[in-house]
Image (cartoon, rainbow, N blue to C red; front, side, top):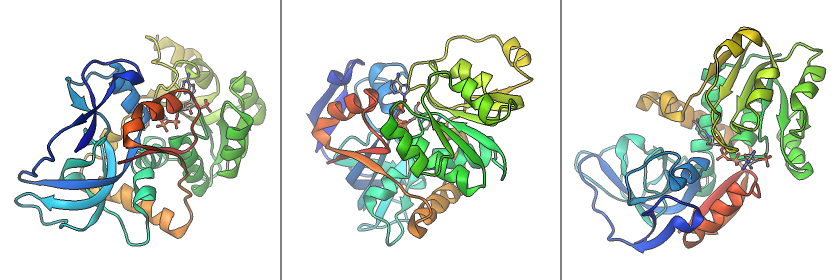
Length: 320
Ligand code: NDP
């Protein structure tokens, strides 16, 4: 089977196409023949060595496709079922071995591509608005990179909860997408903190969902109300440097958290709750899951260049 592997961390050129034998599922494992693979920003951190993974490894941690075979003890799915999963290393490939407890069935009526496009990023948006800072009707949030994979889903979910949404994005076209997703305002990044103060009559927003990191961190703190929360959930512009907690006092008794999806899918029940809500909203048409670009598996490096070059919107997929 074709796989995309990393032997030496580096730029997109570190992605190597390799042939490996199709694996056999062991106890509790499911062999999935992948039909669509999710590209996520975390894949670029692992490829570059910002997040350390023992080499060599197959990149990617999200996929969807057909169950080809199951190992001993697996009763939740059977060969022929359509399934989706995330947070399991090794999805840039034609086949993947996945622990059965990580696999979710794709409901009838939902395409495999839409299911995978709403999985890692959809579950992330879900935990951010429902659990990390549970948004209430009438509150105001700031969402950075509002036309990105997580961003477009976050905006829609925040609006479902009755919140007011201020988004940022780098181009007019991206700001248009953020507004179409329901954003009340879509701003360029320049002096966004001042603009946020104006839009909130000087008060500041209740919460900032910041996946951009280094470039926006300080402005995000400046945008919060007294006792507001900065949810730093990513770093597409680079990691935030070491930080003096006294700043949280000076800027208004603020809260800062740095969560990962893993912290919010601790049990099978929690995973299924989030996945069934996200897929249910997609089936009802309440949540639009935008697939912005598709690349053949062997062009994974191009997909990374596009994602890191800020040239994508919504979800990026690899097709085996
Ligand atoms: P996106 O589709 O949002 O792509 C990243 C976007 O970041 C770009 O499109 C760009 O939008 C913006 N950006 C701002 N500055 C830069 C820069 N210097 N270089 C590149 N991009 C920049 O990616 P994802 O939706 O996959 O992920 C978004 C963030 O969320 C990432 O940081 C990721 O690591 C994080 N994440 C965290 C999770 C968690 O559980 N903690 C789970 C999933 C994702 P624009 O041009 O509009 O600025």
